[in-house]
Image (cartoon, rainbow, N blue to C red):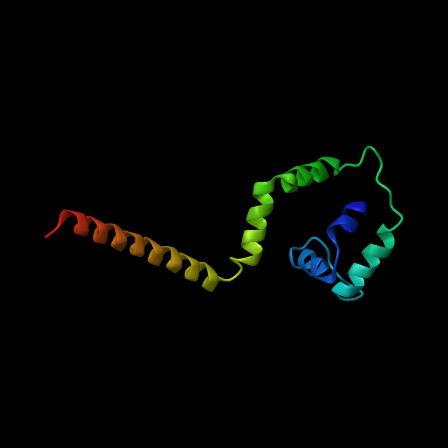
Length: 113
């Protein structure tokens, strides 16, 4: 119960777990599952022999690495649609073409006709 309480922070989390087949809803929708898990998990305290303790520690170690958080923010904020990815790639291609053009212009200036 404590593990589910930690996984579900909003109704969208319950919807994701339902779509993946982790939970199923018989009585109500995702909002009802969210409220039920939150109410049931408020007074639950994990013991020292919590079976998912290694999962919690692994997730915390992963999230504490700066590189992983940067990639998560980059993917969430800047690369969340295919059009943004395509436009950034096009920008880098145009930047590369501009640099190559500048190099050839400088070389032709110093080498003369």
